[in-house]
Amino acid sequence: MTATTTATVTTTATATRTTTTPYTARPIAPPVLRELRATDDAGRPAAPFTDTEGGAPLRCCLRRSDPGERIALVSYAPLRRWAADTGATPGAYDEQGPVFIHAEDCEGPDTDALPFTDGHRTLRRYSAEGHILGGRLVRGTAAAVRQALTEAFDDPAVALVHVRAVEYGCFLYEVRRGSEEGGEGRD
Image 1 (cartoon, rainbow, N blue to C red):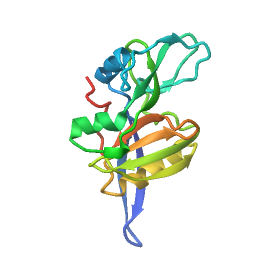
Image 2 (image 1 turned 180 degrees about the horizontal axis):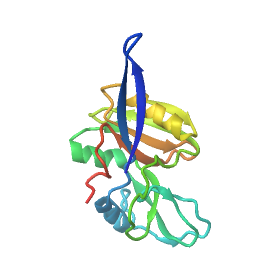
Image 3 (image 1 turned 90 degrees about the vertical axis):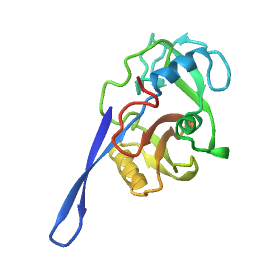
């Protein structure tokens, strides 16, 4: 799904130019989800459970879980998987961490809105080589996240941005330059 923001840029005292910049929140792709449901990126088997409380941020469909849903907490290495697809070499920036996913296949995102914008977020910028270029703390609104993405992609060296939760540091989703839709290797 694509969330689109429109920015008006003043080019002279009398003229303006309007540009539309799409930001695609990319869920974990279905083929990767199938792998993670068997063995996660730390080499451990998934251990599905019934979520009794709800509210877990699901990276497969980019929404919060409902009470009673079957989910799994797995280790995921988003930069490593992106690098494998692109030939990048992130070196020490390769990391893995916990993410919630549905225990079984799901339909993926059902909205164009940027997800999980209701809390403090860190947006990490990465180059095409997989090296970190910087980051920014964003305070909990969709408008603030869109603005931070605009600022990130104003730098031509930025290839992708990871959006992360501040409270736990967990990866939430990635946004890549351009209008490409869907997750990595998406069916």
